[in-house]
Image 1 (cartoon, rainbow, N blue to C red):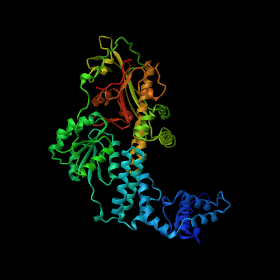
Image 2: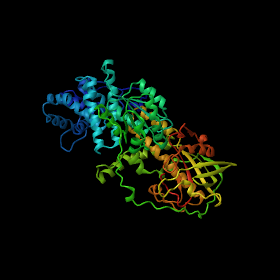
Image 3: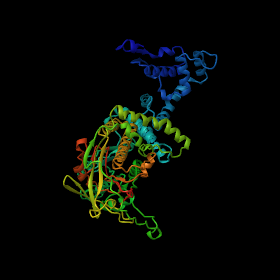
Image 4: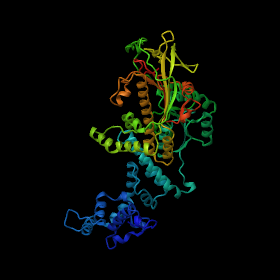
Amino acid sequence: RIKKELPGVHTLLGVSNISFGLRPAARKILNSVFLHEAVEAGLDAAIIDIAKVIPLAQISQQDRQVCLDLIYNRQSATDKTPLLAFIDYFEAQGDPKQQVQETRETASEKVMHQMIVKGNKDGLEDVLTILLQRYGPLEIINTILVPAMRYVGELFGRGEILLPFVLQSAEVMKRSVAFLEPYMDKTDQPAKLKILLATVQGDVHDIGKNLVDIILTNNGYRVYNLGINVPAETIIEKAREYAVDLVGLSGLLVKSAIVMQESMAQYRQAKLNVPILLGGAALTQKFVAESCVPQYDHPVVYCRDAFAGLKAVRDFEQGKLTSTVYESSTPRAASVPAPKLIEIDKTNPVPSAPFLGQRYVTDIDPARIYPYVNEQALFRGRWGYRRGKMSAQEYQTLIQETVIPIYEKLKQRGIDEQLIQPQVTYGYFECYSRGNSLLVEDCGRQYEFCFPRQEFAPHLCIADFYKSKDQGGDITGFFVVTVGPRIGQMAKELFEKDAYHDYLMLHGFGVEVTDALAEYWHEVMRQELGIAQQRTKDTAGFATQQYQGSRYGFGYPSCPDLGAHELVFKLLRPEAIGVTLTENMEMVPEQTTSAIIAHHPQAKYFAV
């Protein structure tokens, strides 16, 4: 009422008056609960002896309930008044001196450990203040915080904790260290292993690298995160400047893996003498072992995920880090039935395009895209909410009570805060195939797209799904879709604020909404071409291509060469919707994707 009826008036409370006359142990708990409730109600300042309160996180739920019944004058099931029930309850708790001693000297370490493990920030500074009365800041970090984070890593490794909860633990760790830093002398700073992280040149994807940063930083290591699109020359320069112990390189697409391979010789020539850890979606253990390890004189290690990176760093500390090796366990080819050759039917009718050339669409309602989001890919893949060791019922409860509310909130924010700004440039063009190439015509000019062919049966190539010039030619489509830069900018801000959990949620949401926009626009184009008779009933149908034709994304298994983007940009001119190219032909903003649209009924996903 004060805040509402007297705007601008502030409040000050003498907290301990509420507990005057009660036993010391009971006073401390009641003071603490009352202070918490008052702050929640809008209290601006308090007069309080810090020794007369304890962190709310150290107070059991039962103790809190008894205090709240007294504060709000709530009658319990017994005939006792709230005050009498409170007094009787704490009389039965035993020797108050012993309780205080246990709270201050024994429970604080356990509480701090549990706060890290459970990702609980409630009362964090109070617990750390108590610990500082008995330990130095560096001792708290090394003997309580770091072991707790390592335990979190062990839980994750055993499948007993999910990635979003690991990030919540990391947030508590980061905030704890930030609180302790002002208490450290310059000579008191811990000697940390130093690791340089970078996304390789031409690559604008950073979620994997940033997760590695979070995990390593909050396990006590010093990380120098150079960001995205970092040239090898800069990596060498900064590795020397910071005198790092290890280098970690990341990249998402196939081209980035090639950049890593080609840069190994450059690191060798520069006499870089530290191990290099490699990670990214396009990398495999085989590729790293056979294509990267031989090019460098020091350990080169494939890291499947952030925790594999953490293990590699610990192996380095223990002097047992070695280069990745690969030994094939695949049975001999003679024992495996060969895939059948596929004969592409060239008699299929060519649909009529609604127009020839390029058009922009910038008025798409995000709500139209959301039904196309692959929720399984988002929840389990991007966000890491996997079932693991949970029962089916436990997992369903997690999804309904935790995951779905996060998802619904982000969908609404996408609209209300304009985080999702869908825009499309697309078009239809006359074309014909010639060998492994597709020749596309536009305004009197011809553009040749060269596609790779499988070296193994059935030896497919995207050009196979189009008619040759002698067969009368064909029609193809292209699109570039983006949800705009705002969601990427917001995710970056969350990462910089150490809001790791929210960062993972927002970034994953943006990636899957971008793919949903691509799926939605592919359906629009199938409708315009008159080949949308087969409609999928749910998002699973999109993944299994239960429709005619296919969209092949540039940089992905069927056409991994991003160089084709140069021609796509000439045809579609996506600069007008804010999309540009890096040196390695990746598109910016990150939440952007492109595709060539094949209408042929036999056109389905394949890898070269």
